[in-house]
Image 1 (cartoon, rainbow, N blue to C red):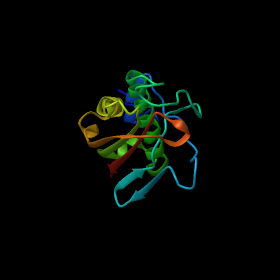
Image 2 (image 1 turned 180 degrees about the vertical axis):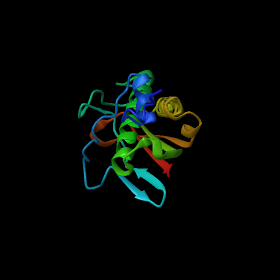
Image 3 (image 1 turned 90 degrees about the horizontal axis):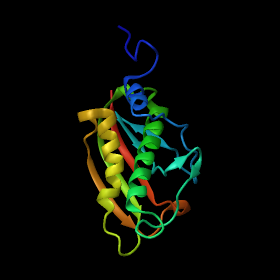
Length: 161
């Protein structure tokens, strides 16, 4: 029986494919930083915006121009982009032994207080992809504005072997 690994695809990328997802190219930084760095056995990603094919499909404040449901979907896109950044520095997502922490930022209308529900988009995706390894600590923070008027931004810390 051939596994995803023997066919040249990582187990995690095979799981992404089962979910109808593929890793994008790593998003080019919008300022002076790198998408991810390794320190010891951890990868720290920079904040990832919900770029799809190199573009932001939605902009504005959640609770005003962007619905909470759309923002939740965009948070999942941010998580996929973060995984691409992780892979770019460790080579294989099967090396991830734990998603340690997720930090999510939500550009929020002043009356919007559903930031945790928005960032659930990232958390749920990581759980679907990694199972128990994807269960993590998390912060969900409301902010007045994000780069390029993005509705959401997500960064993560992953442990690997």
